Length: 118
Image 1: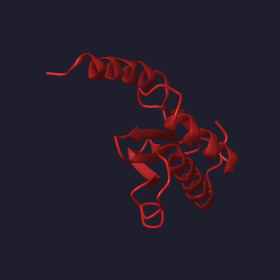
Image 2: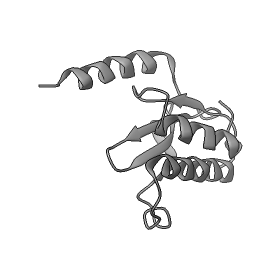
Image 3: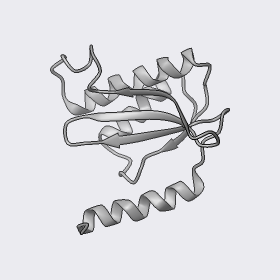
């Protein structure tokens, strides 16, 4: 049985996903945040395919001893680089039920600095 926090996030996630849909031209940039790591994917919902992915557990990022917010900034820059390499400049941001502050906000701002538009 889910606790109240999980139920709240689940309902917010459903509400967001009714509106936010990724396409080939504008894939969905979705964020998953665990207690220790943060992961992000670019998803084309029309094909049901992941275009690019990045996470704080990747080599190069995992060895660095930094705070979680700085870690999220590095992941945001990394996904922006991967998106540009794949020829993607515009995305739709899916915060996945998380509040837009802290790690999620720093990841989004770093992705914008990296050249993604959303």
